[in-house]
Structure formats: structure tokens, C-alpha cells
Image (cartoon, rainbow, N blue to C red):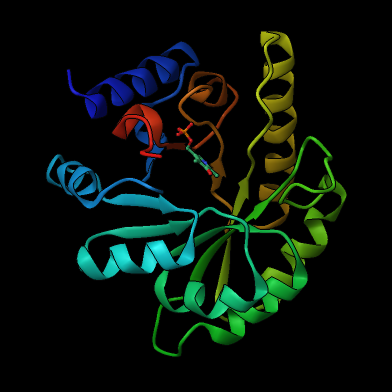
Length: 224
Ligand SMILES: *Cc1c(COP(=O)(O)O)cnc(C)c1O
């Protein structure tokens, strides 16, 4: 089995263990810092969705890989002065965490493009220096996104800090899933919970994640 098949098998088995269908879980290939050859190999193997953390690096890759069939997700911290590039070049922005960014992305999304899909990044660890809004701010952001003409609210994204205690890990994903369900009840466009990475995708899928973001286990370790 190659790396892609191994990750797909892990998703299938986690889904089965949770009584879910693997078809309900999207695999996002996190290609930050990965060389083009590795990305091309994954495209040849059928992967279409890629996640990037750094705007300039992502734009370079998009140019080299110019392929309309690819779907690009921005998953890194957002600097306000980079929102235009995000609005013009990405299909999804998963790391929206403040109203200012909502307004800029909607204003800067070019006319004639389909609306930009956005996720609200929530910080469940309440570490002030981390990206992501606190849970109490989700609803205000969701309302702002609903009111933004060129954005579609698709759900939540989170990067919970790693837990060594499996019970704590389960609890944090369960809390995230609860917030996601509340959001989905109030906003009919919501259908995506982006959670789970190489180390914790099983726990995330067990807790109801609909999109896992996998880098290392798909591509191998990131160079440098
Ligand atoms: C780097 C990154 C990932 C992938 O992490 P791996 O451990 O390499 O699978 C997923 N999500 C975000 C937001 C990242 O920055």
C-alpha cells in the first residue's frame, strides 16, 4: 500500500468503527512545504483537494500546477493584508476567525467567481496567542458570514492541541462536534467539520469530523 492508500484505509476503518460511511469524510492533502513532485504524484493518484498555510508558496504552486480540477483550501493564520490573494485564488478559506477578515474576503472576492467557501476556525484551547476565535464568538462570526454576499458558511475548523490522554482527546473532539451541531442547526449551509490530522484522524472521525487534513502521513515528513 502506498501512503495515500494507507491514509484512505485508516479513514475507512475509523469510519466503520464509528458506524459511519467513509464517503462522508473528505481527505484534504496538506501540501505546505512539500515539493511539487510529491504533489504531482498525489494528483496522478487521484487526489484533488489540497490545503496550504502560506499564501505566497500556495500561489506559486497554483501557477505551476494550473489545473482547474484542483480545489485549494487555505488553512493557515490569516494576515489582513493577504486577504485579497485568498479571495482571488482559493476555493475555501478554513481559518476565518475575525469579522474584519469576513468583510475583506467578501469585498475582495471577484465578481463572476462562485462564492468563497469559508469555515470558522475555533480555538478550543483558549490560548490567546493561537489562531481561531473562542467558542462564544462563533455565532457573531456566522451571522457576519451569512450577511456577506460573496461568502458561504460551510462550518467549523479546529486544531486541538495534542492530548496524551485518550479520554481528554475524545472530550475535546466531542466538544467541537457539539459546537458544530449547534451551528448546523442555525445555519442550513453548514455541512463541514474540518478536524483531524496525521496523528489524530481516528479520534476526529470517531467524533464526527467530515474533513481530515493530512500532511505528514500522506507526503512523508516536510523537508526542513
Ligand atoms: C500542517 C497542518 C496539518 C497537517 O498536519 P500533519 O500532522 O502533517 O498531518 C493540518 N492542519 C493544519 C491547519 C496544518 O497547519
